[in-house]
Image (cartoon, rainbow, N blue to C red; front, side):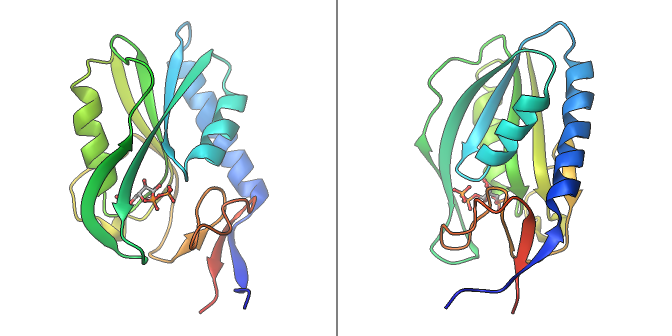
Length: 173
Ligand code: PRP
């Protein structure tokens, strides 16, 4: 049976917020080349939209980690599935996430990536659920702070479905 999804953040609101983030980052990195690192798979939609709106050159690479078990609760174990293709040493790195939840994924990634000596390192997340945090870590820039609801769309899935929704939705209970 298909789930009923209601809109939490509309396509228009998401687009406008991403444009603001892109403007802020473009100003901050004026005259530099920014290296986006996307965490597969959820961050892909946000990363592309943000990159399209940037006015400084953007290069891209991807990583894949597994942080969840099969359900909707975190297993607490973060495992590296796919590493970056290129070195980040001396580069202006921005790690792109779709959502921050417990903070375990980000804390793991920040640790391993900072050891690789980027020139600068920043974390941008489209969504943040601070209520769920178990590790003390904060993004540098956030699109929207949201309540503790199970969200889908704009890269976020429910059993791999709904990533392609152009808005952030919640599945009706
Ligand atoms: C999500 C999200 C983050 C992580 C956040 O990825 O993209 O990487 O969970 O959760 P945390 O703060 O509790 O660590 P997920 O493992 O669902 O993979 P996906 O992006 O492929 O859907």
